Amino acid sequence: MFNFLFSSEYIFSLFVALIIYVIYIPKRKLFIVSLLIGFLVLEIFWHANLLPGLYNYFLILIIFAIMLLCAFKVNFFQMLFLLTGSYSLQHLIYKITISLVFLFGGNKIWHSYYYFLIYFLVVGVTLPIFYYLYTRRFKEDNEIRVNSITILLAATSLLFVTIFLSYWTQDTLLRLDNNLLFIQVNLYGGIICVFGIVLLFFNSLNVGLQKENKTLELLLKKDEERYRLATMNAEKMNIRIHDLKHQIHQNNLNQDAVNDIENATRDYESVYYTQCKPLDIILSEKKTLCDKRQIQLFVTADGKLLNFIKSYQIYSLFGNLIDNAIESASKVNNLNLKYIKIRVFQHQDNVIIEIENYTSIIPSMKNGLPQTIKEDKENHGFGTKSVKAIVSLYHGYTKMTCENNIFLVKIMIPLSINLSNK
Image (tube, rainbow, N blue to C red; front, top):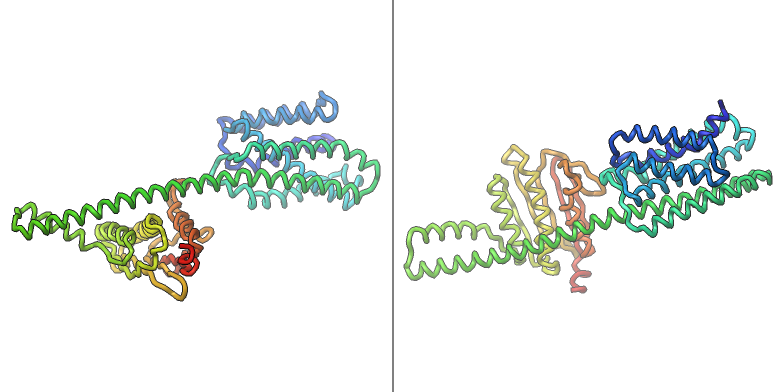
């Protein structure tokens, strides 16, 4: 019984390593059936030992790869990612286990149930750490993203070389009967596996970062176009009011013209004069929206402090922040608490931007940013990231806090550095 369990440990450990990779990977229909069939086929071929030595390992690898394609919605390179990751983690766990076995007793406990005790202890420690550092970071993607095929192939080649060397050196090391040397060589193999896993991690992580940066870039370009259109609309308004004043001067008015004057004047009165044109435009736009939602908008802003920032970036920065504040304030029932306060002022050598609003829903924070409560999280939450990205371009600092239901965004941007670079 023990010999069967001991010989089956290799296949079992591959599946243990695989599980931690595929928690959030899309599965095919009846994927559990595919995994069960795959496990049985692997067990049969493994114990049948149809091919000599190392060739049997490659046969198992091919069957394992086919099982991955049948059980999960992955392409060839995504399958190769899972294959390399699973084998690397399995080999790492084995190297740690065997090193501990020879540290505490060598052959005396290697072929005993104590081996499995140590193995499950290693698994119980390794998998939670692996999940925390690796798996959970890809929870939102639900997809394996491969940035560089070259890096993936390099990690795969590194793994195969490690397994090949391990296979050919293990018997030699055992014959030397030097436990310390045996432990050192196995730990070196484990370190190489860790390096391979790190390559896979940053390979997939870079894709996520590239995707996010591309999304932020597209949003910023969209805001740039919106600012251009908003500027044109503001200029059209000024021209229209100028024409209406000219009609008044000529006393050439009808009732429609009078109504136009009243409407245009009402809109024009909402325009702010902060000495920063893009800030005035976005404040005027959002003031109209605030009025419709019965939100009081209080602004104290020295706009000329922002003139070193590109106009469309000011438009985007304040637009995203005010939109978030409006969305939050709209959910407040008490009219006295439906407000947004905006302040732009200088403190020492810094321009300070503060946007405050009352919120009835306390947001959860992650990495200093509030998390969206919308179901489609992949396509939301970029507003605050865009804000942070713009501020970072000017060597600034963004802090978002929520205390006593008061959500406060505080931005500090150094003036001397930016003015000298202008």
